[in-house]
Image (tube, rainbow, N blue to C red):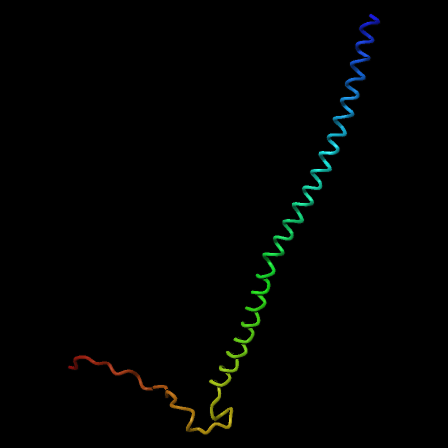
Length: 112
């Protein structure tokens, strides 16, 4: 019986030592995993930044171009809207205006 207790005690000590080693290994693996995750996140952030900067620059350029075109469109619309009534343009430069026809339409067909 004493021999069994000694064997159990020895086995307990061995398992205790093994458990301690496994805990240390587990802690090291978790630390490595954290470092890898941080490294991956940094790489992803750099890749996103590297690929997004040209897109932001392109968007900015397109917004500027769009603003210039809107100004030009407004200028041209204002130019088209000018006539003798709202500018110093002579009435002869207004062009021909369509006069609405107030007469009823004539039906064509056979008359009796």
